[in-house]
Image (cartoon, rainbow, N blue to C red; front, side, top):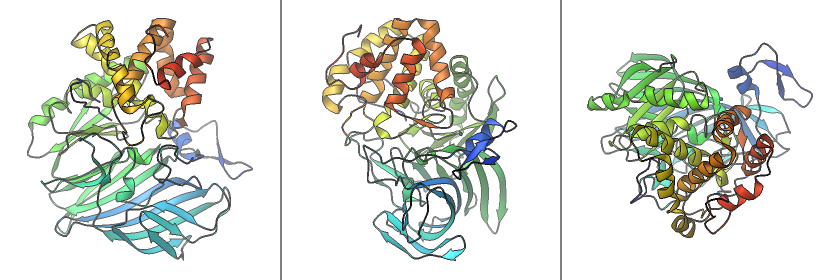
Length: 474
């Protein structure tokens, strides 16, 4: 997610296999990495920062979303199918779904089920057993409404389904808000694959994550189908509906890229032409792009975020600047390929993306990296005082600058401590060591200690958990 703090110049993955004894699946020698990602199961957790969203009893393996949008009545009609693994014995399946959406029918395994929908909690009355899998179908409709974001930032004051004054629809939902438009286990430790069918009145077109597999016109409506076969956390899923123009491109390595820009804003395409160079630069440092394609979606927003394989950006010049293109593309490794287990560790995403943005800025525009880090270090005391330490921040101040600048400076201190070659080797290897999965504070700090042969626990604790600014050589 891009960070735009006042006075601070900054931007802000399917496996055929054999069944194991516990009901899970194990990869076979012949399967591809993408196939391997789909067969994995998650161990969802209760979020330490936002425990009211998500349910650790549910591990959703896949979502199929059939969405019809009527802009005249602002009505979304959804037919949703989920493949679910129960993680424990329970008398119910609980999902998150926005209160304005009315559920009309639920069935489990083809058998109609009773349910309660109180507030955002959709409770399906179905007995489940550990590691058993269930096919759940939900029909719903209504006028989706965005929900307040737990932040003091004005650019993300609300999250979820948003209808712009132009009539364009877009969704951005970090740390939550996917539940405003579909039934979901809305917590980052539960990754799933997705397929979408989106219908809207022509000339509007529906855009989503993954690969565009079909686009057709029927009875005055445009119908698109999308497939995201790399498991994604719900906050990384996006839908947009509007009059978009698609422009195709590719990176130097041959990565297929596309730009979805408002049809009446052709000048935006020229700004997006900086994107292949940003990806090329990141691949030099982080290795091959982790997914099969990358899209950029420009919407009527002042913010932007790293929705998986389809980066969503606001249409302002800053939000589509080269620095932001680098920052958001970096999240495809740090945030999307490997995702925090819960929101306490959002610093893992933002700190590294911010640091890579800083390195790019130093190489392409100046000032030097040393000067830039010295400047960012001066923000530390104020940021800790206002929002808390990066790994123990104020829950009401999500996405504040403390999770960007402080860990970015920390990474540069670590680079100087262990040397360039070792540092960049490990920056490249960490996402691959946890590909398609989730990780937390203990995982990443222990991994860096193990890989360097040096106990770095005190280093990380001082930078990420202390309420006071560490010395530069901590």
